[in-house]
View 1 (tube, rainbow, N blue to C red):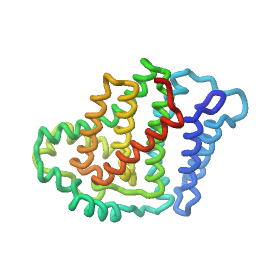
View 2: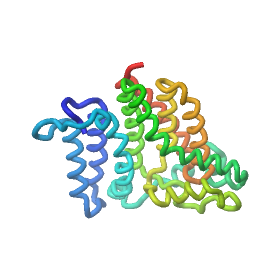
View 3: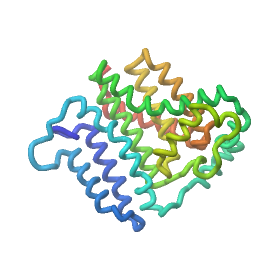
View 4: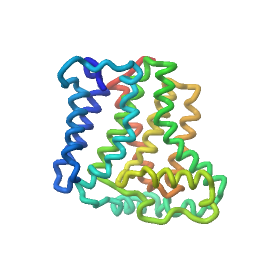
Length: 280
């Protein structure tokens, strides 16, 4: 992880590992909690340079990009952590109530039924799947083309992720796909429709709906792109808009999840630029 003095992203990673690890002090922790606690403590010590011996010598690209590479692992442990705190209780009722007030209905259940258009569905589901592209491609592109901006971009990305992941641990919301059937009809035969649903069935973490980290990630990467990747910024922004609409249309997120994710993602990214401004 860190080699020598801890950087802002290393300290941020250590802080997240500590705060999320506190969930293992709650009474509903899983049987493997000692292993998880040890891993969290190791991460804190490694990120802060507290491990004995010489600093770990790692390639420069790995030192800059390691936080992004471990995002899937951090995401995978979320159900264990939020169940440790809440024992399988989720706060969907509160979000659904807010949804009804803000949108006078339930867009995540109504949009696809009102607009069962196959081309539209395919575009939105493909945009939703671009989330995986948006996580990894911009940081790698910056490392290859503008390495001086990579550190700030990764810090913004990880601050956005960690802020959302703490919500998922301490205020878990399942999202509509766990409570209601998916949109049906002709759109269900679409290639990207089926691919999106299969991807979520294979790797979705229960309780990780509010705020939408998908939307927040897209917003963060759009801001990063307009600052350091202007040639690709329009594409990233359009993918983000499609991702947000697709998250609702496909019944993956409540509309309030998407709205909250966009707002929180904007805040964390702008805050990150003040902490780790990077080089323009």
